[in-house]
Length: 326
Image: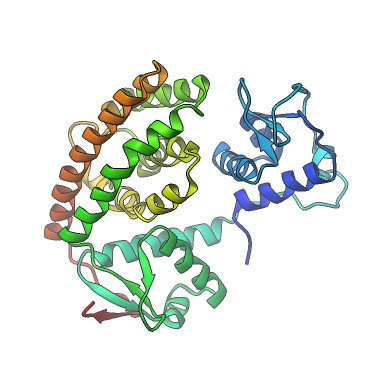
């Protein structure tokens, strides 16, 4: 199975670091790396985050990352294909896995829709047949979805798709209200001004063009705050707990922000903007307060829109799902 693009980028960059091609202090910037590899910024950003978590690169008082575990003298130079052995035939350039990604997104969407109408056990073999994918791919898809909190293993190690009911929704939002404001305060000291200005700029742009946008753009804006910004918190255990609530973000991507039901007013831009502006102005406690208020509003909107979706849609059950009483 092909690896995710961000994982391919991670391996190529880490190899150059470990071999000493990229020396201590070399500046790594998202934009130039994306241009060099011929990919979008998103997978580069994730690869750099993973490299940082592994201690191979570090942040410093400036934009981007530096090679090494601790900041020091900054080495600014234009990176070339030869820095990653891409021109010598020794290393295969990272390539998008569009076919796999398209299958993954479809499975994610189908399962999320089904979860609104009941609980199901998943027959992995039948799932593989239905989407014409290998068992390896189907297994990886389900593992990823379990990390997002959409599916889980039952007591017999069978895959279970739990129902999205009012109780589950309330529990997930309670976790978010309890943890996200605190995690935001912990993350605040590691956020760079350039990052915050970038997030603020994206929100202003979104407000200017709404509703002329697609669900992927909404997904990116949600990730700016609830994944990337919170991801700077040094407490990795808290982030692992919050990851179980990311299925709420999936509901936004596949249901709440479907083109067929865009609300008259933008859904969350001004709330996010208030949070980022407080962070930019050095007021993390006010940002945390705004975050809690935002999550209260978000829960109300999600409940309304999920109820609307259930009323307006009837989903044909998938052949790989068996109803469960769980």
